[in-house]
Structures are given as structure tokens and as C-alpha cells.
Image 1 (cartoon, rainbow, N blue to C red):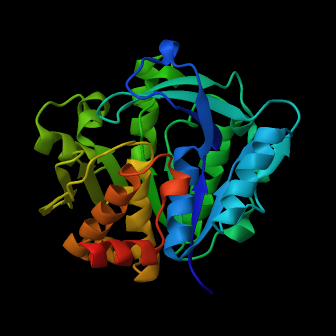
Image 2 (spheres, helix red, strand yellow):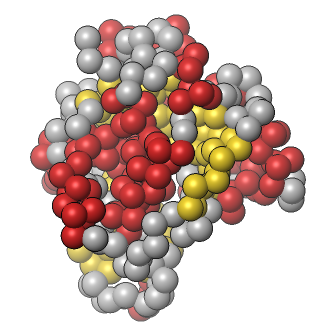
Length: 321
């Protein structure tokens, strides 16, 4: 049976401003794109050519229809996405500064994704050597946190690789202390961590990067990838580290850059049939270089899911260069 990615968490509408380099309060008009970090990762993996499944809940509304249609168009399996009339599909308004960096305002009090229940996670979906990926946004005190815990339990029982990208979103957590505690609670459950360098201090409380990274090797953690924006990324195991510089491109929108990066890594794990026992040995320089290539492609375009490349897009880009 072909292995696949299972991603759990938020699926939402990102409203992107037509006017760049303005504060959110000064933006007059927006266009909508499908968003949510786990969904972005699903789209990345599917467009590159491996199978992905999204676990979430959306409203019985036009935005929910749009999101499901968008994922279908990029061959993400949406058959496990639940619908509800109790809450609406989540919305996020985003402003982008002159460097392509973002400012968010979220509408989800609660949103449909928060209502995904543990009873709605189907164990039959989880198979050996699949990958489960999750982020921190939906680890709040809501039914969806229990759904994450159930998905992780099934993944552990079925010998899957578990990937965690905290992907910090402070506006969604009123209590930063609880946010940090929650992330630290879930880190030991993962085999693969992807963390940006500016998230390290908040999560670990340690200023020295090497101390911070070693602190993350708790529980099942085998590989930590620390991304450093346009500079590159370093892959750490308990005994080694490899720095791989990024591709240099002009960023127009960094939305989905980190998701494209980890999506590309997961694609390679599935494509190369890497199991969790060999994760430390096989997350190498070539895999990170490929992930940089995918991420660079995405940041040079607007939106996350619409910007995710197919393998042929990357080959075309190489040929042009």
C-alpha cells in the first residue's frame, strides 16, 4: 500500500491584501486564498506527487465549500474533512510589509476546526510508514486538541513517523505561558521537529542555539530542523548537524514558506520510503536543498496553496536558470 501524509489541524481562509506595505487597519481590499499550515503541507505533498489526507472540520458555509474544492483541485484527500453548522469556517486577514512578512487578525471564536472531535478520527486511516503532521495553532483547550491526541496515539500504535512544526501564532493564544507549556508537552511525541530560529528562545527559554536544540531532544525526537529564513536551515540529530544555505530569491509573500519547506521534506520521506528507524541517517543535505528549492518557489508568488509547485515546475525553473 502506498504511504501517505496525514495532516491534522486548521483549514481556513486567508484574506490577502491587494495593497502591499500597509498595516492591516489601512488595507481597503483583499482577495481570498485557502490557508492553514497543515492544509498547506498537504497541498505541497500532493502537488509534488505523493498522497496526502487532511483531517479537520469546516463550516457548512460557502467558505467551507471553497476550501474543500481548493484541496480537491490539488489532489488532497478531503473525504475525512467533517462539516458543522455549529460554527463557521475560520478566517484570517493578513497584511504584508515591504519584505513580504505578515501580520494576522483571526476570526475563530470558535471556528469549525476547533470542534473536530476525537471520535471523528478513523483509526483505519493510519498505516505503517505513513507520516502524521501537526502544528500548534489547534492545540488549544478545545475538542480539536483531543482529536490531535487521538491521531498521535494511532500514529504511534501503527509505527508512523510523527512530524511537528510549532508554527507559532501568538494572537490565537491569550496565555503565552500555557502556549509554551502545551508545545513542550507535544514535542516529545514527535520524531521530526521543524522550528524557526526565532521560535527557539520562546519554546526552550535558552538563548544559546546549541543548548536550545539539544533541549528539544526529548522523548521520541530524532531530528530537529531549524530554519533561518533566507539564510538556510540546519539539520540536527543528537550527534550531528548540517547547515544548508537557502536559494536566494526576491520574496513577494512569505505565506506558506515554512509549510512548503516541511512539506517538501515529508514528500521526500514518503518518496524515498524512509522509516522512523532511519530518519537520523537519511534526512540529508539533498533533502534540505530540495526543500529550499520548493520554499523559494513559493515565496516568489502570492498565496500558499496556489503557489505550491509540481515537480515539473521546479524542473522548468532549473532549466530556465
